[in-house]
Length: 370
Image 1 (cartoon, rainbow, N blue to C red):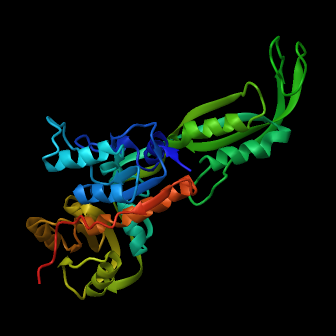
Image 2 (image 1 turned 90 degrees about the vertical axis):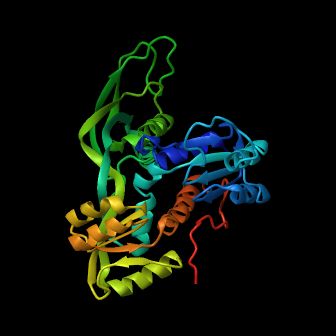
Image 3 (image 1 turned 60 degrees about the vertical axis):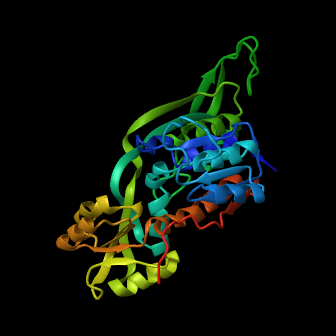
């Protein structure tokens, strides 16, 4: 089986909405055609010549990279420079390249959530909020014999999720009236007669990210030719998006003990640590990639430790002065868990329609010199 590139783009938009990307970033489709077919996807943190060659050798029709290949507009496309060579290799073989960068950094279920999940943090929350998703109330009127079918359809499409509960809705019973006019094809009743129908009013909450999908599912499942429904925007908001996460460890640990565990979990060659090795760590803040700018926010959240990458000298000094322990595990190592989570999320949504593989190319340029 195969899927279209445009379908992959829709799924990635659900997982990491483009609106969450920073202004300077460049995310989305960078090479390829939306109508092209894909039956194998290669996932990677970075796209370079070796990864492009791997995509060719493993016959992938699409590459999804965390870091974009094209950050700024290109003045030339020459195959004798590194970026041009990669682009030429992809374009010549009609391989689609998609990037999900800062949008995947801040999205729910993205880079920092994957890192928090790896550490087993309890009920992780957003460290620095950038957005809270809008919520809508969907109200639809359904004939009694179709209630269960329509309710299941909208729930399966993403409606009715509140906290750890799914299929949340409110149902009230009443009488609907209508008169089928000439040319109508009514589910019940006759042309020209005023009809009364035993109906249910179904109300459920829908996040903005899946509103169109839920409405489409509702219309498809509903038996009426013309469906009566309303959509209201709610004042309360849904899931938060933003950089970093924080939460409690399942069990407190000494800093040196936790550092050893993190090194094993991330499979990294090195860690840089700030703080007393014997300090007890209970609450941890994490930020995949470069999180030095979140030191003050981690302190505000009363975190004992910030796990991230790319810590600068003066940021380390700042953390030490403010009483915050640091573990710098490197940029790539703290972001790599999201590649595996993205694979699982895509597999769940594509249900075996395509093969999803993870790049075996080590793209981290940093090596430990012994």
